[in-house]
Length: 221
Image (cartoon, rainbow, N blue to C red; front, side, top):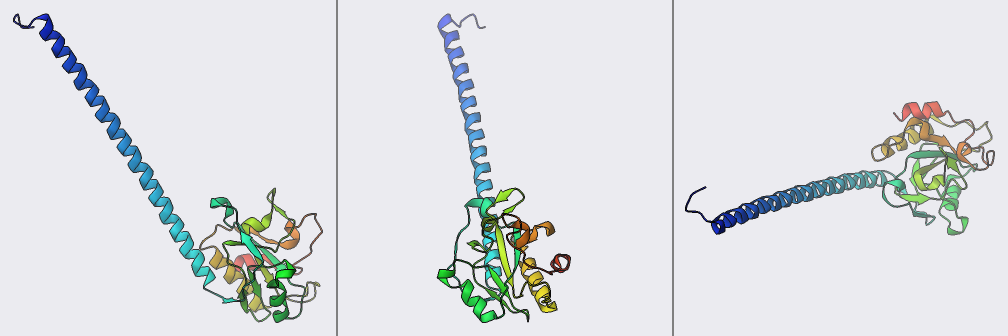
């Protein structure tokens, strides 16, 4: 220490040193806060971009088929929990394609499905895939109830008597729908299920009798 520096001068130096240290700490905290904010912003932008891509893929599915709009649907639960993770296959137990479209689009019927597949492979869409169609009723899959909220329902024209054969065109059409759905939803093979499999109580439904599920799964990969 210089012999000319008094006690007052030494105190001034110490105060300046402490102030400089505090300033560096504040700058460090500000830099960390800025980095954290940038990370949050980047994560938010990535999430928004991913959601935009998902919506575009869903829109592409909804543009792929002929429409006969049904009013019988509602919103899925919010956020990712409302995204479909399974496909439920049904048999209509009816004879006429046109009459079946009428039933599924009649407000008083209280039933619908996302898609209807005719004997000739014709596909009509009735409900947007991002919406909750009313096709499964009381149901449970993987220990979780309300399968309607996380499924896409496909009705297939068939008498469901075990004798009425499903056509090659129907197998191709159903598999084609599942392939399209897989561009925007994660649907593993084991989540392509029958109405009978998910109905509560067990035995309440039997459809679609006679459908070769392994063939559907193979064609939809």
